[in-house]
Structure formats: structure tokens, C-alpha cells
Length: 327
Ligand code: PBG
Image (cartoon, rainbow, N blue to C red; front, side, top):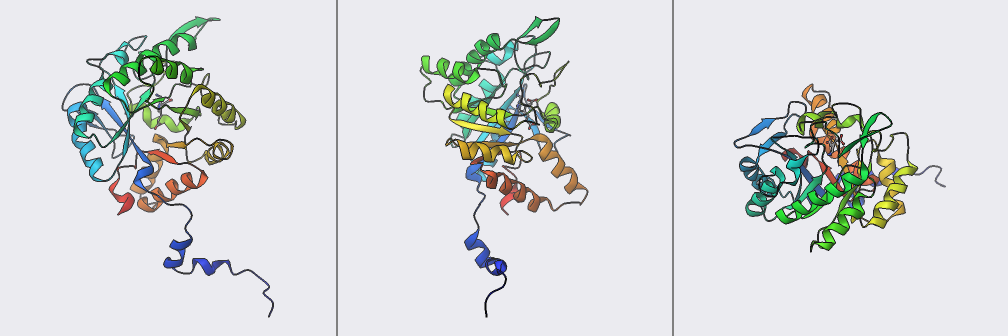
């Protein structure tokens, strides 16, 4: 008899066959765990907005990093919370006492297996909470991209001297990738890759991060330099610019609701694509799971799989070290 319909469920009928035809897989090899490094000693502050996440002082984070290595986590992304904030974010450049610089040295010792990636921005270090140097223009205080670029190079060099394995500039400052690349190359750090926050959207999903990283803009917002969530084509223009400027990895952020952007970059460019499952994406799953509305472990895997399916090679996620991920 002639077949009148397609039996597509044939390949789904049992676990053995499903595994055989599974296209996308999850592995800790592709996950990056963000860590918040707090000034001082003996600090392990729970982050209320992000249940299960902590701010760590350098002496405490090394133990946790060893646990992460024990769970086969390969890479961490470091954010710093300094003791003092000022208009220029001077603490970010402190070779000796900077939180990130100290954390890099301690983690290199304690966990040489880990790839140490450092977020490069000034918003956690400035008292106004903006991502760089501000100037007065047309009666408003706005970001001075040129002045900020110069200081980003200084911060990158400080991280490089302290032993960073990779630099991730997150400020969406025009020309930041080329400035940092040239600065690194001219100072003997040509081997340090740049993971560019290429398509970083002005997203409300960064809400819980404000508590985690101890800062938010004291006035205004970041829409003057981060991408408009309504736009897709400008992500491609950003990617073209970052590639021309020397980026090694392109990042899309947030991840979960931006699968179309991940896919467009994947199809247009052949660099590794990273996607950042941000604080709000994490907090939503945690909140729903705490109320028994979602099966946490299954939902986490589904979100990560969908980000990979969209085309991401790497995922930055607060679930990277979670024991339930691969139980
Ligand atoms: C800025 C930065 C932010 C995040 C990572 N780097 C905040 C912002 O741009 O407002 C957000 C990460 C998250 O929400 O998990 N240095």
C-alpha cells in the first residue's frame, strides 16, 4: 500500500534511537562559570537576587574554584567588586591590590587547570556606575568613548600582567577591541585572546546582576551604547567591526531570547560564538523552580540545549558548576 503520511516518530520511539539521532549535546567543556570577586577577606556573601550564587573574597574563591575543577568546569569569567569607587574607576588598574589582579594570581596557583577569563569594563569601579569616563556634552553627562578606550587598554594590560588567559571587554565602547588588541600586542601579550561582547543588548534581564556586581548606573541607562532589543541587523554590523578589529570570539548577550541573533552570527561568520545566559535568565528559572512550577534540572538543560541549537559554541552560564546539570 502506498504510504499516505510520513511516520516521523519512528526515530523517536525509544531512548536508544533518540540518542543516536540527537544533534546537539551538552558538555561542561563548552560552559563558562561567572564568578564575583569581592574585596576583603573571609567573604562569601549570598546574592539574594540569584539564589545559589555568591560574592567571594580571593581567599574564599580558590576553594570553590577547586570544587568547580572537580566537577570538570574548564573556564571561569571574573567580575570584580572593589572597596573604593571613584569617577574614573582607578581601582580597576591596581596591579598590586586590585581584586581581579589578586584573584588572577591566586587562581593561577590554586587552579592552573582553569581558563581564567576577565570581564573588562569600568562600571563596577566607577561611583556613577557607568562603563567608562564621562564628559559633559550638550548639557548631559555622556560616555567619552575615546578616553574610555585608553583606560580599557590600561586595564587590559593590568589583567595581562596578573595572568589572565582571555579578555572579555563588555562595555560596548566603539573601537574597544582594536584598542585592546593593539595595546596587548605592543606589550608582549599577543597570545591573549579577546572574547568580544559583540551583540550586547540593552536588556532588563541584567537586573539581578546589579546586586551581584554591586552597582547600577546612578543616573540614566546604557541604551546610548548597548544594542536596541528591537534590532537584529546592527548585531551583524557589530560583528563585522569586531572581527575587523581582531576579536577571537564573538558573544551574544542575553542568550535565551536572542537565539535568532546567535543563529545569524553563526551563519554569517566563522568565528566561535559565545552566548551569555544572564542573571535574569538564571533568576527566572530559580524563582519558578522554588515555587515548584518547573522541573529545574530539566529546564536548565533545555535552555542550554536551545542556546547551542541556535548556534552557540560556548555558553556563559551561572549553571555551569551546578551539580544537577549532569547528574
Ligand atoms: C557590565 C556587565 C553587565 C553584565 C555583564 N557585564 C551589566 C550591564 O551591562 O548592565 C550582565 C551580566 C548578567 O546580567 O548576568 N560589565
